Length: 588
Ligand code: M6R
Image 1 (cartoon, rainbow, N blue to C red):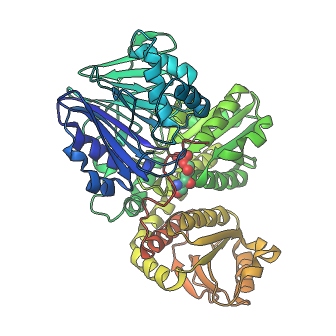
Image 2 (image 1 turned 30 degrees about the vertical axis):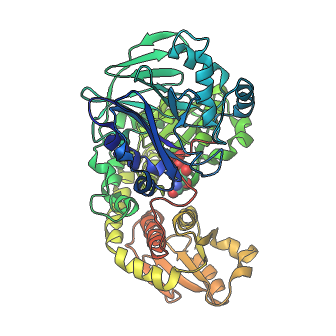
Image 3 (image 1 turned 120 degrees about the vertical axis):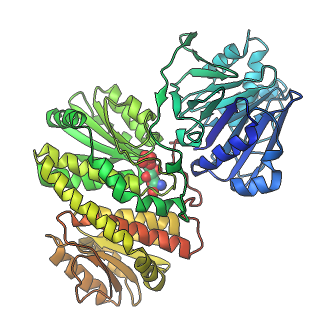
């Protein structure tokens, strides 16, 4: 969970690295740094703690000169957030600078051995071990490729890194368990954790696999370190545009991405019919199907599993990515694992996929990022077609996930065209809801800006409420609690006292009467109800409206996202970069 970027070409590297680094900031933003090889063939390093703009204000990355360099934005795992622990790290002889994405699991013992051999460490990170290990291995190796291969055999864990070599002026780009993509430009190359970081310069990309090493200078050579040979790899053309990865006038990416939900949901519905049919067939044939996802993607799994139960009368159990191992005995060669992930890189989900595959299960995935590890390790996949999602809080990817999964539930029940009609009605509602953003902002300010918030729903509206809870906690830093309306009487009513604010999701479906009872239980204890419904009920103290559609709970999703967004901004937070969190969670 860090962002790495390298540049080798004919232009000054620092402005390109800085611009690219800012686009990677969603991956981590507690410290950052840059290393360039200057005209005197010396590696210059600048780094500091804080967001990229802040650090740049202090160290002035643009004062670094050179046409080859690397840069890193960090989400701390090993070692506190300090200047010393910010990447890049250099070897004792200053011949190498290295940045890393991943976690080196055996760094403690490696570090001990290296210290015994005389290496001096400046940080408490796992990463610094890598640069010293390569330096040490160079003593015996015939070249850097050989030293990196040896290092890759000694190191354990996830250690995708970029190494800038002073001698050769090359960048060595090695992938192990964290993404690494090479951008192929005009007489220039990029190496990055994410395509969007270099999209402004090129849309041609080579996706590296584990144990592949790309060496960048005025050309790009790729080696398979296991097979010990140079290899040719296909160049993919990325269809996303650079503009999609900018705010285009919106104050935050999150708001832009909520507004995009209308358009993006239409793309989501526009799935390749042959692919869709292939997945429907696999789901039909499977003895058991389990969903797997983390965070917001898990909430999409919960919603999907309810619709699959409703429409197909089958139980597609949702499993939390981090809890997969508890359920691993359920997997065999008659089972399908259906993995949901925006980034396609979430470590918890990836681990589950690998275990399921080792037991002979087939894996289907639904991802947003083309070429991501989860996509590549799946037997079949669908893509969200949502374009780059930059805000850490997932919004348009979530609605797209839900739309595609519900479409599949209809398709499995031979009702594809009815499904499309109903989902199109939902998308129309998205458009109407987004226009109510200012009203939702006012209401958030007057009624919902509290220390504690409760959200209740039943049926599909329950996991929708859970997603609202997650978003409010994630970006507004308000303690929120979502529960099924019927659970109130079992515990949480104890917390309801006069003035407590509660958001009630009341779709016009079979849950409505029970929801009214639950609302009355809250009101009897002085709670204040903000109702979200297609019908204005007398029992609501405040009301957010939406139109009557068959899939009403799904149509409510942007309302909750907007509430979270406005609460976050009202409280002075940056909704795009919530504290302590990162977009792509590549650690277990
Ligand atoms: O990329 P993924 O969908 O696999 O990510 C899973 C979670 O980390 C993610 O949904 C997270 O919960 C979001 N930041 C929530 O908005």
